[in-house]
Length: 286
Image: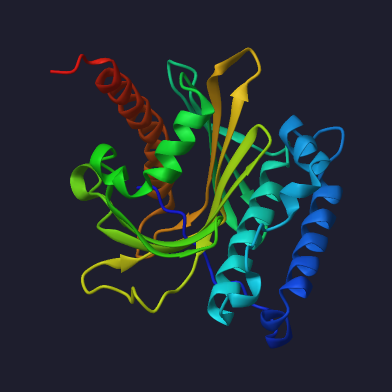
């Protein structure tokens, strides 16, 4: 499953829904404050690059005056998820190795105050960043075609260039250890310089109420970070932060095993998908 769902972000005032300049100033100030607090000698290089690009902190909201209060709320939720994910990924201490695959893929975890246990997948994919970004963002609704952990991804609503609301339905786990789950998510896609982000958090949407027979799970913040490998620009460093509440009475040991394995499986399925795309492009025309 590839959820990117999250809790509703409270605290948006009616004045700000009418004044996008005020909304952006508050959001930028909050993100600037968090990055300044987190970034330091122990921070990752990508955080420092984000700090150097002030343009990253703006929403790029075109024709903002035409946004409805509901759309403004979704935009703010997406930015909140991105801010929270950056904060967690910027913490270098306290991570525990969950699993390391033979190819070097690894999953780490830590407990974050106010969030719970989060998982972080770190892999290198033998594909250029642009190709991966196009698959994960541009072809998002096709994910169920190549990832057996996902039955369906549907875009419910798009807001501007950066924000969307999606509905995801998870696939069956081996032995049906975890039954069907669905997620309604707000996603914030950002491309700044050489780094791409896809962050998200659980939300609600009038077009997708809870479904009978399917448990509505929650997660967030989540974030996929794509950066070109410094040693080979045709390869991409892929980091996936995952935080999820599957709901129901499932032992934590099972949840931890399922989530970490899901991340490792996702990396393998993604590689197979990209290799298949390359093969199709190279096949001679009939």
